[in-house]
Length: 502
Image (cartoon, rainbow, N blue to C red; front, side):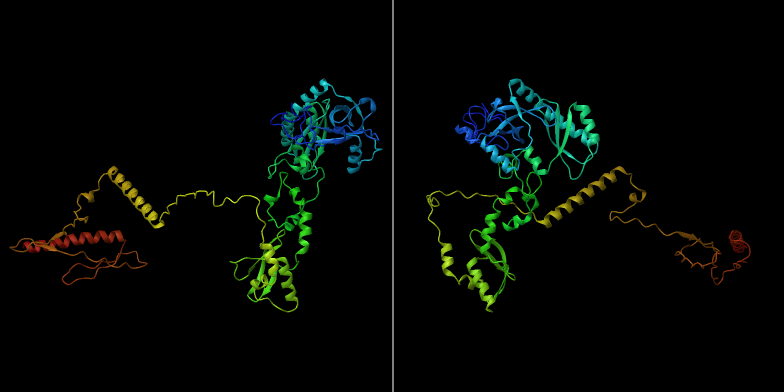
């Protein structure tokens, strides 16, 4: 049989503290467990105290109630108590007797305060009703988050807790500021048909209610035993020589870990023997800078500002002597000279106690792990191979294009040396002379005359000797001049031909 609220069993896998009655004797599986050792030992109180501490939902919430004598409720009993908002709730008595007096004093609750009372012990039907209500909490939590998201409220619903009789539901939420949830309460009351109570909690209280595992591998301190939250700042990390890394120093709640305060007092007491202004030491070899401090070994690691390849561990007593020399006006030669100031201290630190275990260094030897060396690719060969592959791909694309397109006319007349064939120069026939055949005369192409800027008329050609062509008149449009010149040339050619025939 396991503890109420967990899945452990009394047997081989039983959690330490679980007894055969289904309860936790010393804690371990219940949140914020308390161990009533007076009741467990069967010791009767000399001064009876009529107050009891009742825990709800596996210790996530605890309150104090008056315990009338007729109820006969003691530690570990399920009881029905009065609710301050009306109705009844079901919880478990976690403490009774004299320990309740000490707990109320610790939480600053007055013994004469007006508190609700225990009605009676709970029976099986009350516990079945409580289990039915607890099973609905998960569905209600999912639906409540969806409703809050549709209303665009800057809040997060962390946990939901139903009252034992199912008439009231408390929603625990976290928010950065004040939230107007009046419309949200109307939606909750219409959908869930219960009395709604909204209660804002912090990020640490949310982690305590939900629970989880920390970086150490154990359950969160806030959900198991830590009940009072103290402020944690980065000064605690600096005293312990921890790196200011927000990711490593933060817990599940997103705040600084509570465990940073656990050893803070020990570090503060140990740091009283260390000098306050020893970050820089002036030596003949150069300025020495403090790198880190080992509080428990009482060592301070220094290196030179100019050459940081070498670190030296100096005892704190030797640093005190070096500081006294600097105050008197003497400068030590180097860090090695500071190490030689108190050899007896260094010898004491080097002495090590003999180990209680057997030395198996020469008996057991682990094989050396062989690792395959990765071949480094030459960057030049890789570039050349990539360029060669690109050239091959480009040539293949050109071949595909040449096969698809028909050959051009110029390609048919090209020579093997890929030079186009030169055409023969044009021959101009000259007029026949008497008793002779027409002669072909090869005339080179005439140079192109320069054009006159700003003049639209064609430039005039210079007259040659023996040319009987009349000069252009220059009157009329350009088109008319071109026509007249063409006709005049024909007439002169015909006239020369007739003279030759005569």
